[in-house]
Length: 125
Image (cartoon, rainbow, N blue to C red; front, side, top):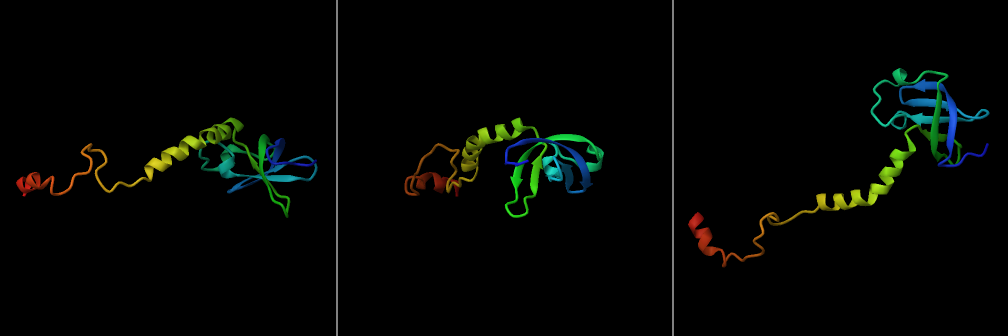
């Protein structure tokens, strides 16, 4: 079978390591699902979540050009689509988070020279 990125596939768990699971696809083709791509939530021990022979469905997220190794994600497709849809909004939020002000931007006093504020400053001293 000719696999492509984004394709939905079904397979069986044929191996479990602490860093992810190996999934057997059609024929002799294998795919690796990294532990971070196995669930929406944090997985502390992958052996408690998966066992050899479990049937899994996933999405191909990468195919190595030279070795033809397949990376698989078992996360629901809707989760990734929502993140992609909100990427623009996230970028806008990040722009404002990284903005630095040289003055106290929360006080609406505008720019005033020291000469204009001399009387007030002398009282504070």
